[in-house]
Image (spheres, helix red, strand yellow):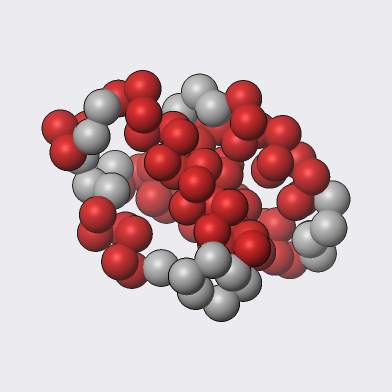
Length: 88
């Protein structure tokens, strides 16, 4: 997860409109295990952030994923997204 955290640090590094799409793809990568182990908490975190940034696709995927998660994991994902948004 850290490699993505360091890559997604400023709007100057990528187009503002494309940022939500990139964050959505990060969520999908964690949800499917593409390039790293499956991590549903991280997947929900990135999909949530992408949805906040305006990705309708991420919002739908986030809802589907949330339906499969425990309340504890969902709370952890929401907390992680909130922390990330506070810093960035």
